[in-house]
Image (tube, rainbow, N blue to C red; front, side, top):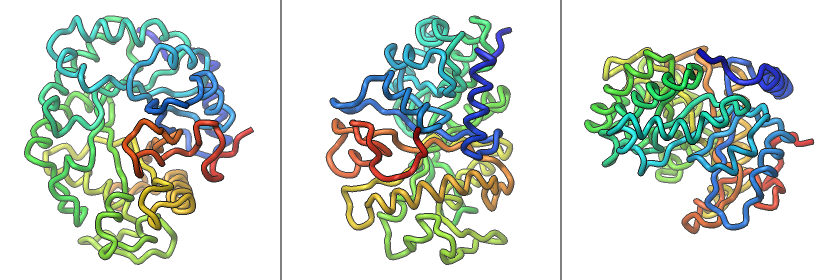
Length: 341
């Protein structure tokens, strides 16, 4: 049995969390995407995470140059598989063994992996039927490599819900319910969480007449919204609780969640998108997580949150998709947020 790498890494990570005044039981990170032709070198990016005291990073797929840059760094790392690899990872244990051998084992001693995510927003979809077995195979491959501290999960989008409002009525689509019912026991058996992408921006932008901007941005004093015996003062909590309600309906109330993506774009749909709105949303969400309030349906339950995203990425679809970053590709901030040294 192998313990997490590098006690020194853990000590530095703890120090960073103290500096950010974030409870040790929660993780705060940023998604690091690579859909740009002008992005800084991975070593510069990892140094930027360090300088800005950002303790965790989520990667969408293995990139050797990025994993190499992470060696010896305190960052906690979520590493994803490509969606196109899900079927092969489920079909043969050899594929999972090969993936772990190529992307985890060479870095096991000096990269602080916390999770492997099998697919990103693959539920619902053609690959969803393979995810449960792929997760199971990944756990077997990790065990075969004597690695027991890395958890395995998958990332689901808001479209996995057929009903999201009111939160108490939250329910998965028929396809998502069937798939997540197979995944949940595996996650629970290993103490892993289901990962959710939660975007109040899209909920607000799609129906500005029914939701106030203050409610979407988590501003204090937003109009309160009641649901049965619970009261909501922001749409983020309502969206997360819709997932909790959906999990209850499939008989999995004990499954915890991690917010694998959330953020607000700075351009592409003005005036809703702006640097000020993005800063307000992200700051209020960070404060919300730091307070450790949980959500009305899960009070006091800490939430790990990974903001989206580190950089504006110019190879994404034109419009808002290119404007989610905290930083420009030249590593200058899009708006003041992180306290960088």
